[in-house]
Amino acid sequence: MRAYLRFELRRLVRDPRLALFTVLGPVVTYVIFSGLLPAGDRLEGVTAAAALMVGLAGYGAMAGVLSVGSSVAQERAVRWLHQLRVTPLSPRRVVAVKALVGTVSGVPALVAVGIAGRLQHHVELPAGRWAALLVLMWVGTVPFALLGLAIGYGLPPQLAQPVNFLAFLGLSVLGGLLVPAAYFPDVLRHLAHALPTYRFAELGWRAAAGLAPDPTGLAVLVGWTVAFGVLAAATYRRSTAPR
Image (cartoon, rainbow, N blue to C red; front, top):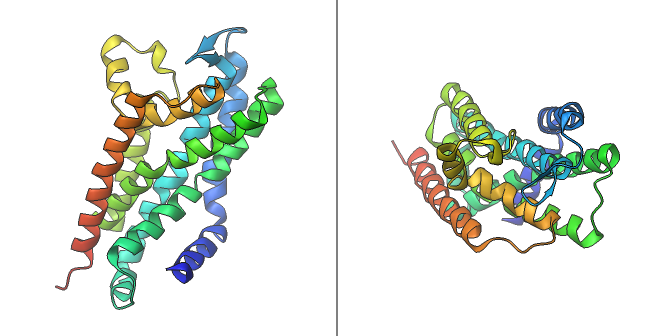
């Protein structure tokens, strides 16, 4: 399993497209739009600059994590998954390694947008809060990694990429990563609170404010994680079943 993990991490590091898409986009968006925020405004318990920083860091991290699903669909097309089935690796370990590597792909965006927030708007947090913010948001990408795998294992390459993009865009917008959910009408705000994207960003907002994760938010995030995990495992078994 360790050898397979090292192999997947090396593949991740050697893919420059990932950094361009998941790091450059959210950083540029933050630099442009954070300057339009009203001075002194507060959202989600922190300054508006910090709230947007967390939202766009989560946006970039989710883009990186979900992109793993598209690569999985390509691997299915060349029957790489069937080759894995003849190795000692169990399906559970294969899914676990891919999910872990998927979460790692979200870390560069979290770091880069955090640096942009610190440099452009002097977002100042104690070192412990920066560390908690990074760790909690990294862990919070797990359900999206599993969703990406479910899409990659379940759909052919020509469908996986557009479905991945639609899931990414829909969850980002409705979950309040681009526009704060506080500005939504009541119906959409309640919907946002039920989505994993809002609860994912909430981990970061509360960490930046020095608060522990909200129990309700954690329960929602765990529920989505279990659902996407079951779906990913089922689609993996189906995609590698003998025909």
